[in-house]
Image (tube, rainbow, N blue to C red; front, side, top):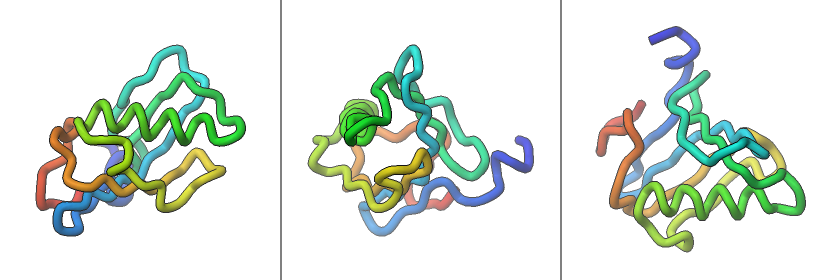
Length: 104
């Protein structure tokens, strides 16, 4: 693992809430979770970063990946930035690299 991958924790648990620090690449050719990069979880999405479309798509995409309703995901910071912080309430499935109860 390179130093940039471990620069800062990209996720943390607060009880049943998972807090993710995400780097979003909008207008990608496909939606996917790339993995940890520079202290954030890199996520590619197909939506453009226009009029909140990317944020709405990101929430729907993560809801599908984490097996939760989109209403259980809140954008805490980064509304108009590629770097975002999200709260996921009681995710049913976790992306690779996340261990329940630990910080990474």
